[in-house]
Image (cartoon, rainbow, N blue to C red; front, side):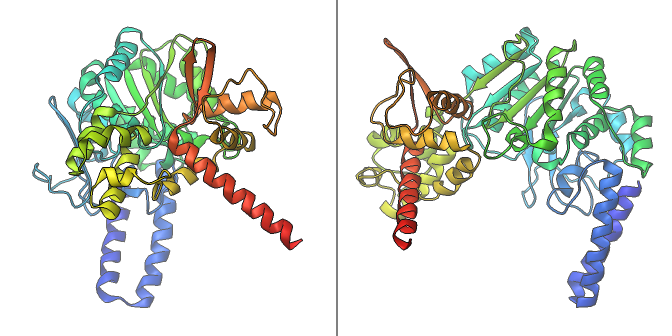
Length: 456
């Protein structure tokens, strides 16, 4: 089609530039590239750039896209295999690319009705059986319309969704995975989904019409009624504002809230699965909406440490608990144990302070999203030796009691504060890693203020 013809022309031009290395050719390539991104953006109804062109075009050519890369997604009755560029493929590469019309005709076959081109290529050691059972019950028995899988970065939200797909794919007409980070607007996201679900004739018309395509909530809802679809929105936290309480939409993403409300309250047979580090405010009390908050995964962490050949197995549980059984965090810390202590866990744990190392950059990104009241709550809780009772106004808390409650509730929606049930009532605490990072930031803030005061 016209889109791939333009791409092939650009790809050949770019290859010539790499061979000749002439500045004039490079400048011409930049001009061609700018026109290409604009043309593709208009045709596909979404913002196209170098960083996301592969994942977006894969939607139109599900098996193999010539001249772009070797990424492929294979789905059969036994497994799902998602591979990235430069991986050795056990399946012979297809030498021809199907046309968009052919692709949609193939969608009549249930085996080809999944678009996981934007799903991450992840590796996991074992399944979360309890969580999978809960998700299957909500989806297949309770007819839940919106499910949110909530958890910190690296805890395993995307892995859990990938584990779920083979177990429920026969119950859905379509399964579509979309990474929110690839779509600048809700309209572009909806257009992407509707294009995949459209009949062949409609699809072919859209891919040859050079005018931007607009899609409404009602169009998407109609498809969710016509087919039983599982839509997966990954990285949902990207639509929320920085510096505000959890669940506050960015100004140009408030229409997501309207879509979620419509999906939650409309009659249909589909399910929207949201993967997020921040809990959206979706129809609280609606029995068609559920949130699954996932925590650390002890078994996966044990297997991870075993694969890394760390010593002192009797100390593994202590190490895992210190880093909240977060597989990503523990994998990063395992690097530090190897680099600093030659894999000796006991020696690593002998340090008097909790080591963060490369975790600091991850925690910095999390803290950048917090409101000022949330930061004050973290700083205050970081200096408490035990879980706190928020029903009592603390004398050393700088904000009002109302701000304390708002901050606690918002942090809970980010999985940064955990509720502990005791005989006296509900108490709240923060994870050791968050506490250590909060203390570090507070010390830096105090030092900075003292430095400013001394200069004055």
